Amino acid sequence: MAVRSTRSVHPVEVVTVVGGSAVLLGSWIVVVRDHGVPAWEADLFQGINGLPGAIWPVVWGPMQIGSLVGSLIVVAITYAVGRDGRLTLAAFVASQAAWWSGKAVKHEVNRGRPGAFFADAHIREHAGGVGYVSGHSAVAFALAAVLAPSLPSRWRPVALGAAMLVGFARVYAGAHLPLDVVGGAGLGVLCGTLSRWAFGLGGEGLPPRIDRRGGQVR
Image (cartoon, rainbow, N blue to C red; front, side, top):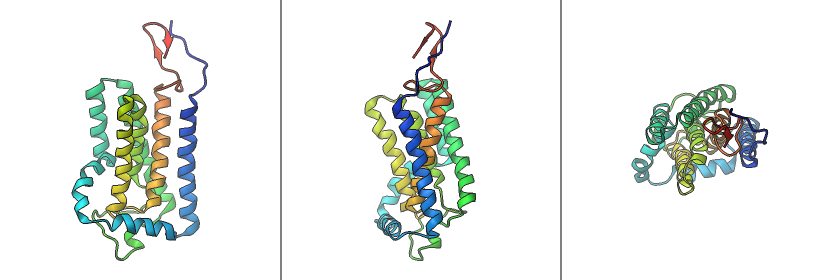
């Protein structure tokens, strides 16, 4: 008979959830408090957004990982490669949760996109609506948080690097300000880790993953 473990959640998972929550909340507070763009954020935006236009064709493709359609493609590839239904569902739920909860945060914060603050911004991709948080970044980091712990160790930095590239690309594209990306990353990490817990994936997860063949928790 399968048994459930009473072990606690792995400390790294707890740190990830707390860290993601802190990043989301902290960036949210700064955005609401300042009612604009802090000087350091403006400098960072202009530094990234002002990079040569030749970079755009390179980052445009990877940036699509954070789109709604792109996330579904990643989910499909996850199943095609690993044939792991649990991991596939976790990736799907995490990416959808990140995308739609990001929409809710946008509605609450109502912060403009870079074009509303910088007349000389390079708008390489026109995006409607408001900026905070970056939905692309939220989805990309949610997928990274779900998939990275299940990948071979040498591939985990690739998953994180891809998520970071999406965030960079959104600022470079003129679609988001840096704090939009930071908030999206925090939201994504939170959605991704909670999705792993919900599907019993990784470490000592919550709930634990059960091997029904031997009745052992793994």
